[in-house]
Image (cartoon, rainbow, N blue to C red; front, side, top):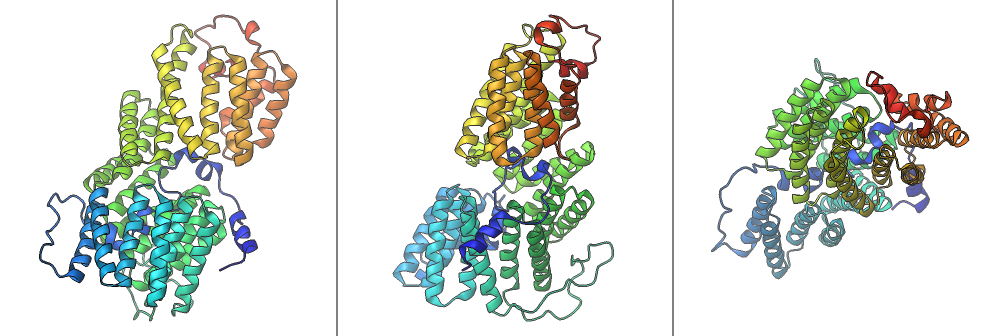
Length: 547
């Protein structure tokens, strides 16, 4: 195990930070924090059809050992069908059978499966306990490969519960163990196939595979550590882990593993604004998922490619990807996958000003996130739906008057924000809380409550100073500057506007910069001097700055 200073160094990260848009916008994260949950569940759990409605097979009259194995397999089938209660019962019975036979490896394997169930249920603390027991049993049985896999799974669960130092140590130990088992030879990706990235195998091995019996498991551990390093902003380390994992999966002929790494690397590259590299990784991940008929992986790749197309302005292409991804997630009965796509499609429709369909998508996404006990997804969707309702209220207030705006839009927006804020507080997500507070501040300002708006903006500012999100902090400072200007506090307004521009980075919006510059130029008049009514011919962009 590494010394504490080394782990602390890992947690600090190294390399150039990504843009705030991708890595600091916490309200957009609707998936597990440490990577793909499907990967930690293992192939036995996630592979296979979910859509079959046939009842699980009967196990009457089966010998004890065979019955234990069959119960474990049936539990995995039920887990794929999202029948958590049924899976739990089968795992408990299988565990009791293996305990009665003193079968340590059988017990360990069931505990690994039950840990996966605990993660699906959103209780990583209990998953860690199961992985602890499995690890001890693998060690007692001398199963080093099982030990490595248990360390990797426990690392994932620790990251999910927020123990990042423990996760780093577990991943390091797993990787060191696989190296000791013989996976030592340096790996280099094979020559580039026509049209594919140099490190992607699409045509199969061109040489006899080297002896690397645990290469795929080693690759999974490296991929998991790469995911955590992205989260810790150690992007150089993450890139190295992804490259080595990709080569290991290629060497093992594991196309599903290659695809998972390509998708993760695409996510990282998108966070660095390397849109071309991200698009290439997503396209080839999708090709590999299709080749292996991995519908769940294919759906996930379509979703992130849709996100990328939104960034590129290809809204029609993004909608096609979202629609296809939603169809696949629905066919595989992946509740959280469906919810994530619906949330993203709702965002897209909000941009397209298709407000009715956007709200419908948000409503469906929220219901599915609640079904899957995914609080982060619920918070993000509530915030987005609140924003949409707030914009409807603002539009009427801007064009006509606050009195003419629909009070129900205001009440529904405030209700969504209150629920989102409560969830972000439970999640200890400061950036998410700050985004909600700023949105509530906007509503208070539009209603004329400048004191309330300033209090909410300052609360958001304090949270963002801790989280280090420069773009959101700059936007909040610009709103503070506008509020001071509307209240007639010119000196405070100028100071806040100067801070907003000083804190701006490449992810800061043009609108935020324009607002700060308008305050510095004195174009934001105090509210009592701005006039009770504006000419309807006044451009909306100027109206927004004045407000």
